[in-house]
Image 1 (tube, one colour):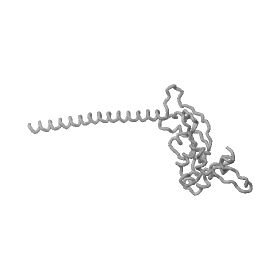
Image 2 (cartoon, rainbow, N blue to C red):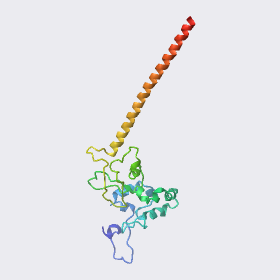
Image 3 (cartoon, rainbow, N blue to C red):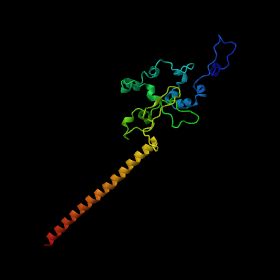
Length: 223
């Protein structure tokens, strides 16, 4: 990548005449296609907050010394940001991008090596599971989440993936969830059958008692 890649051809009038800048967000996306696609789904795109509002194109770093300062530069009056500053997350050193830019690369990695970059800034259940494995209703960490998530800030890194089970037939997270749902459904069916049996027993007993009382009353009337 050379100067001309982003600035176009340098004319003989430079310097002192400045050269044009071609690198708006869409132009950046001509190379960073995955990041551009994620950005289009973000609230940043809706507000026309582009690549160079957060990044220095010359060193690919952030415009502020720390990531949280970068986020709070715009979100300083956001009620959610105010709540975050009083949250246990920030007290434990968890920053904005530690949740909003969590990347859990697919396993196995695709042949082209292209993985998410976290620029949609969205949070899902998988984001929470990446750290809070101990509180899963399943009672044990799901595969691929045992060591937490890999956080990247504009670059692709190879994560350390630790499977929760060393068994050769260990289930994937999706299979674990399906198995759990199956067990729940099975338990529900069992409860329905048990309730039906109890209902039949109670109903039959009540009917027998009532019939005996009616017969006894008729005997007394006949006598």
